[in-house]
Length: 428
Image 1: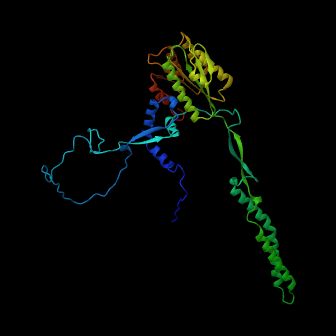
Image 2: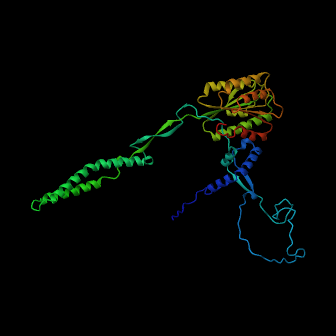
Image 3: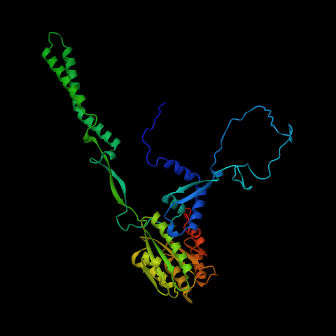
């Protein structure tokens, strides 16, 4: 049996494997702590680690010990209450006295109820966005050549050693050896036949000079045969790879936020926190997702990230202006055949007169046939208004690609976000 001992020096993060195994094992406990931390802290403060505690009883390992065995008689000094054979009642005050139980104070000294450790920033965000994805993401037609994949394109005589094709190289070497050694073998066979014929002659008729010449020729041919190399640089063949353009999986997320006068500052703060969480999710998990920010009151404007989150502009409410602007941007810059289109809208549900019907028609006739997924978040503790009712019609017609949820307070943001963007089964 062979034993392999790794004597390499430990790296800086020598316990990384064990740490990852620990995180996987207690994923349920850690996710619960992370969810509590997300609801507790500000969304703008998401990109830092978190201290997580796990109850000691949940990480305790089973221990096997050898018992004393046999029968034992124990004399307890000072016992005046029990005799041999009495059954002792279980104490009614709970477990033993480690000083950490629910039975009140204890003088048993210090103890530890929970195991605490700190998640790094990367680990914390991994748990925050675990199980989330952009729904219905599809491979679209080629829009540019920056997304390529190396594919096999036969073999070539030039390349790097890492791409040498062993089978093809050995085949070429075998063919070369056959071609180079065949004439030598024929000449060697002829020389040996001639030598044998000469040695069979009568001693009187033998030609010693001819015999010596044939032996020298045979020796020379045998050396030439041995000198043919087993493999030569000429035989080497390399796998040839070419970059093949791949269908693009580019996506664009439209963030549509209502900043009208009916949206109180508390409502706007909740909407901004929802979009900040969405922005962080997209930036972390998708390299090729573009973000388009649209703010609207009576009129809609495309703005940059800074203005979207921090501008104090306000006014009346016409939601259809934002949907119309999104449709215009799609037609102008993001053809559905080349882009995966997503829309996330946040509003308090208040809208101008009959504009909600216009919004419903815009969604059914134009936007929904083009987009992969549309999410609507209504931020209000009150009863739903006309916009929600019209959107319910859209949700009925497009149940797989239109989702709507209500947010009442800041603590609802993370659960609603996870529900909207949870990973779905294939075809779901």
